[in-house]
Amino acid sequence: MGAFIVWTLVVLAGLLAVPAVSHTNAETTVSLMASSMAFVAMALAQCLAVRPAYVERLFGGLDRMYRLHRRLGIAILVLILVHYVVTPDFRGLALTGGLNEIARLLGEYAFYGFVVLLLLSLVKAVPRTRIEFPYHLWRFTHRFIGLLFVLVAFHQMFIKRPYDGTALIAAYLNIFALVGIAAYAYTQLLPWLRTRAYEVSSVERHDGATIVSARPVRGALKARPGQFGFFRVNKPGLREPHPFTIAGLDPDGTVRFAIKPLGDYTKALRDGVAAGDRLTLEGGYGHFNHRRGGRKQIWLAGGIGVTPFLAMAERLKGDEGQEIQLVYCVRDPAEAIGLETFEAQAEKLANFDFALHATSRDGRLDAETLAGLSKVDPNGADLWFCGPPALRKAIVAGLRRLGKPPGRVEFEAFEFR
Image (tube, rainbow, N blue to C red; front, side):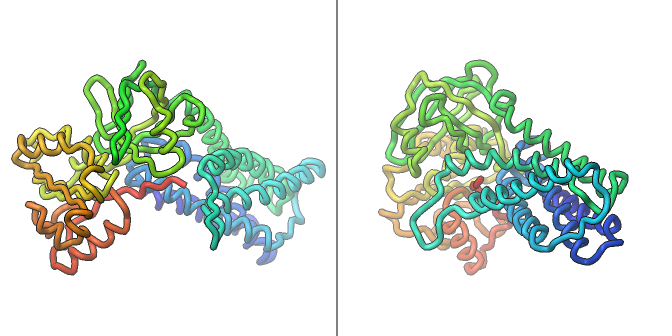
């Protein structure tokens, strides 16, 4: 529903532009349709960057909102290139010659800026090389997109155009100019408005992950098991906010994160975070929660993808009316985390069972092996998955070949760049 609303608003901008420029030629019509749609898409992209929790459910989770945000970026790039290449005939109304010239220059600068920043966002690495654009560089430059939007808003309001300010398209674009600018201003205030201060109470360094536990300094994070939050440490080198799934939530507000040292940030975090450090947390986000699932469920965790299941398993009481099987796949048993929690819950609860699969010991996990490990029949059951996408695709395809297709597959597209 959220994606449908967004694309409808974008297309509507193009349709409203047609009657306003119908007295011109085809090139002008195409160019102004493209620019109007691009402008509305820019404004909506700014709105999605706010991460509004109250509309997240319309998109099925923040991960899907960010996927749409990326698709909007692709659409914006294509549309502004169309507007640039297809030359419009701007013989018509203008407020003043001076404002028109300023608007033209700002629009040109904003165009080049958008092309560079959008390409930097969409292309993560130089093709056929090992050169990748660092996350921190992407995040820093991405913040300038909001400033470029302000320039484009000025451009669209004061550039010479073949319709006056009373046209419906003018009002429509002006509304989105205000909405987009307000959203950008709000994103710059997010670090003060929607974050919670925490203090690290303990750090455990295991083979498979770094377990960071923290207690709230003031208000606690509002989150549910299975959700994730944006996490940063208030010390040099660790201030960038990164999304991590919450691995545990205690009644007193204490949270736990299980973070695998895979990239530069997570490796620096493993070495640098210590008890007593201050954290800034934001969340929770996401809709990965078994309570909205069916009666039969298989939870499949691949590596560090066990974190949402750890938080959910801790909260199981046995009265959920659901039969749950967790299969935890790791390369080596030493990498597994949370085994005490899973084993204790499996022993205590009649509706929860747990199996550990180590590929170094048991071989590759495939659909037939999963079906053999699970006390829940995969046929028609919910498959809740967190781990490498390749594993998910292989298991789902394999279950279908076995004639045991899951009734639904739940996962999060955990990528925000």
